[in-house]
Image 1: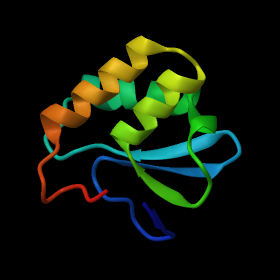
Image 2 (image 1 turned 180 degrees about the horizontal axis):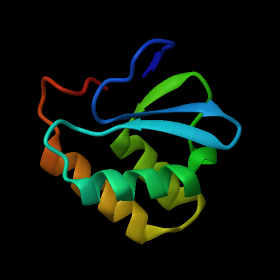
Image 3 (image 1 turned 30 degrees about the horizontal axis):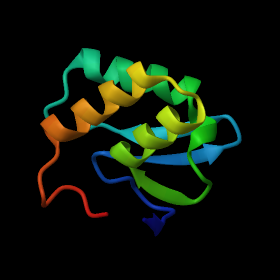
Length: 91
Protein backbone atom coordinates (compact mmCIF):
# COMPACT_ATOMS: atom_id res chain seq x y z
CA UNK A 1 0.00 0.00 0.00
CA UNK A 2 1.31 3.39 -0.94
CA UNK A 3 0.64 6.85 0.39
CA UNK A 4 -0.52 8.70 -2.71
CA UNK A 5 -1.74 12.08 -3.83
CA UNK A 6 -1.82 11.66 -7.63
CA UNK A 7 -4.06 9.53 -9.78
CA UNK A 8 -5.39 6.21 -8.55
CA UNK A 9 -4.46 2.98 -10.32
CA UNK A 10 -7.23 0.69 -11.58
CA UNK A 11 -8.50 -1.64 -8.86
CA UNK A 12 -7.59 0.68 -5.98
CA UNK A 13 -9.60 2.79 -3.55
CA UNK A 14 -8.50 5.97 -1.70
CA UNK A 15 -10.25 7.80 1.12
CA UNK A 16 -10.42 11.47 0.19
CA UNK A 17 -12.53 12.86 3.06
CA UNK A 18 -14.10 11.57 6.28
CA UNK A 19 -17.14 10.31 4.37
CA UNK A 20 -15.94 9.82 0.78
CA UNK A 21 -13.64 7.54 -1.16
CA UNK A 22 -12.54 7.47 -4.75
CA UNK A 23 -12.53 4.09 -6.50
CA UNK A 24 -10.81 3.53 -9.84
CA UNK A 25 -12.54 0.73 -11.77
CA UNK A 26 -10.56 -1.75 -13.81
CA UNK A 27 -10.35 -1.25 -17.57
CA UNK A 28 -13.21 -3.13 -19.17
CA UNK A 29 -15.60 -2.76 -16.23
CA UNK A 30 -19.26 -2.64 -17.12
CA UNK A 31 -21.56 0.25 -16.28
CA UNK A 32 -23.20 -1.99 -13.68
CA UNK A 33 -19.79 -2.67 -12.09
CA UNK A 34 -19.05 1.05 -11.90
CA UNK A 35 -22.48 1.78 -10.37
CA UNK A 36 -21.95 -0.93 -7.77
CA UNK A 37 -18.49 0.45 -6.93
CA UNK A 38 -19.99 3.93 -6.55
CA UNK A 39 -22.71 2.61 -4.21
CA UNK A 40 -20.19 0.71 -2.10
CA UNK A 41 -17.94 3.78 -1.99
CA UNK A 42 -20.81 5.84 -0.58
CA UNK A 43 -21.73 3.18 1.94
CA UNK A 44 -18.29 2.04 3.13
CA UNK A 45 -15.97 5.05 2.87
CA UNK A 46 -15.00 4.76 6.54
CA UNK A 47 -13.45 1.32 6.01
CA UNK A 48 -10.55 2.85 4.06
CA UNK A 49 -7.67 4.53 5.93
CA UNK A 50 -6.73 8.08 4.95
CA UNK A 51 -3.91 8.65 2.50
CA UNK A 52 -3.42 5.09 1.31
CA UNK A 53 -4.27 3.47 -1.97
CA UNK A 54 -5.82 0.14 -1.06
CA UNK A 55 -6.48 -2.70 -3.50
CA UNK A 56 -10.20 -3.40 -3.77
CA UNK A 57 -9.72 -6.88 -2.28
CA UNK A 58 -8.19 -5.40 0.92
CA UNK A 59 -11.17 -3.07 1.15
CA UNK A 60 -13.51 -6.04 0.68
CA UNK A 61 -11.93 -7.89 3.60
CA UNK A 62 -12.16 -4.83 5.83
CA UNK A 63 -15.86 -4.38 4.94
CA UNK A 64 -16.55 -8.04 5.68
CA UNK A 65 -14.69 -7.91 8.99
CA UNK A 66 -15.92 -4.58 10.36
CA UNK A 67 -19.47 -4.37 9.02
CA UNK A 68 -20.16 -8.07 8.45
CA UNK A 69 -21.62 -7.25 5.03
CA UNK A 70 -20.59 -10.50 3.40
CA UNK A 71 -22.49 -9.77 0.18
CA UNK A 72 -20.38 -6.63 -0.41
CA UNK A 73 -17.20 -8.53 0.48
CA UNK A 74 -18.01 -11.37 -1.92
CA UNK A 75 -18.96 -8.99 -4.76
CA UNK A 76 -15.77 -6.91 -4.37
CA UNK A 77 -13.55 -9.99 -4.16
CA UNK A 78 -15.20 -11.46 -7.28
CA UNK A 79 -14.84 -8.14 -9.10
CA UNK A 80 -11.15 -7.99 -8.15
CA UNK A 81 -10.43 -11.60 -9.15
CA UNK A 82 -12.19 -11.38 -12.51
CA UNK A 83 -10.65 -8.06 -13.57
CA UNK A 84 -7.18 -7.95 -12.05
CA UNK A 85 -3.98 -9.20 -13.61
CA UNK A 86 -0.55 -9.43 -12.05
CA UNK A 87 0.58 -6.29 -13.86
CA UNK A 88 -2.37 -4.07 -12.90
CA UNK A 89 -2.25 -4.28 -9.11
CA UNK A 90 0.67 -4.40 -6.76
CA UNK A 91 0.13 -5.22 -3.10
